[in-house]
Image (cartoon, rainbow, N blue to C red; front, side):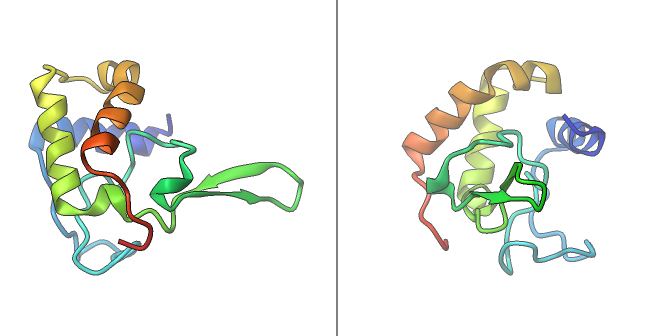
Length: 118
């Protein structure tokens, strides 16, 4: 995990929801009014195209997962339920979240299916 992602997720686990962060130089990176709690997605790379993410080919022929068109985790209801799930499982450390991230992803996706462009 990238160090910036680790530090951001650590803060979220302590502080909770962020909401729209209009002070961010990149806001809005997905859509106006987005919830920025999961700016660094705990599911990255989810590799699930239903979220709006996609594989992009680099010039060198390798691929990278691109989340530019993922709106799902930035919807307020999804962001807040994800935090509830994490807290409900007693997760307080990023390392613990990493171990169960796949099962949480599927639980959340089943309850709040992604809709492309929303």
